[in-house]
Image (cartoon, rainbow, N blue to C red; front, top):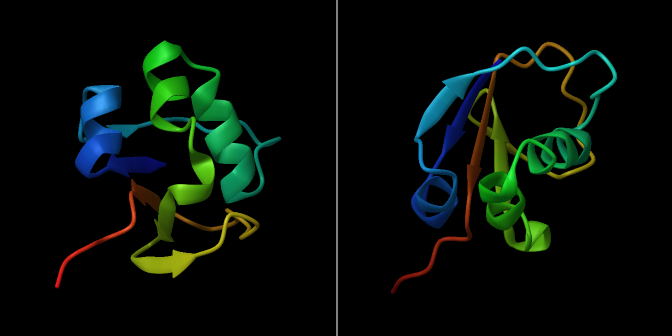
Length: 83
């Protein structure tokens, strides 16, 4: 799966994208966040405030309980602000 990171999520992880083989036991966005958080401290720090993280699967915004089945890309980003 292609994983993309934006804004401060990218800064904390230290990369903008990567391709990962997600285990079959990871079936939801929340599970993906949990799995990524276990990789190392930079991921744990990036997802420490997980309730603020927004997610898109294949360019469609989804909730954290959304299933990963069939998704080719996940993108993580903080909420947008502006005026």
